Length: 375
Image (cartoon, rainbow, N blue to C red; front, side, top):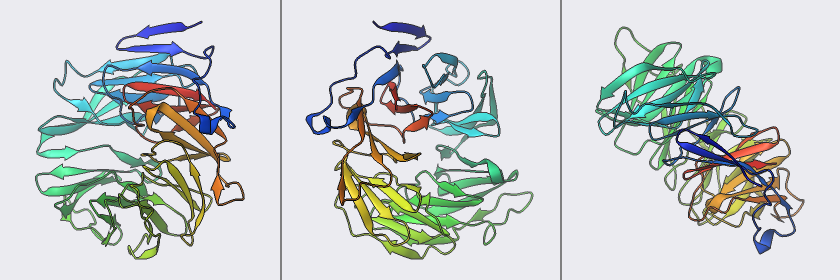
């Protein structure tokens, strides 16, 4: 029996009593991950984020918070009346609020939503000629960074302890940065560029300096967002199928794999292992110290986003509404099989971001669908 909970702009289907969708033949020996609940949005969902009391999504002008366990709406806010023609970028949690860059065809600003009730404020009014994307934050050092294309060219804007500065990359496509403390690492087309405030670009007052990156290293293909990978290193994967580890302070290449001949999604790191999935549907586990491939496993459909390592499992979201898990430590062989598969049966969809895992629930956005699996 189905239970329906209707909220403004969304429909939630409580699916605990539903039988899980049929698994592909290749996964019949694995456990099934049933769909716990699902919600639909009137617009394509961005990558969601977990907060202290729920999961938050943005889609078009809508921001919505839901209970992780059963999907009920906590709050929902629309910015259509205040900022017509604008859309919200993926959300992030920053100093007790949920922040999302507010974008249009000609300007960007920063919007803030209170975690508990969604109370809305603007911390940065939309400004013309600056086109920034998702914010990335590190609360431990009061640092946040966003990248995009502005009037100067490709730039990243950093805020550290209340001071801001811009870093100029020239022409290129700025991807989502990553932060390690107060240092930022930014994918710009086929390069990864490091920004260390201790070495370059100390903020000057009262004006914001326009600075160059601390270092720049070329990658074989278009680089994904890097991840910290232990021992003062970062690692990235790229569109040519190569995984590269860099020394964080200098950008020197520590190791680089041969090409896997498929575009790779963003990597993940845990316990001295770098995990990277590809458009060929294969997950690769790589020794973070040496670059040696430890094991591979097929997820059965293209992997375009980062895996999530939680406990002893690796969670991978694939095309078409599927969630696949593997043993994080591998299986003692060169090729491993999934331990469990969930299938929300969403043809022609792609996952937006890595799976979000809390307790026994994993949440993934696929197109206009937000799916929670029982794990």
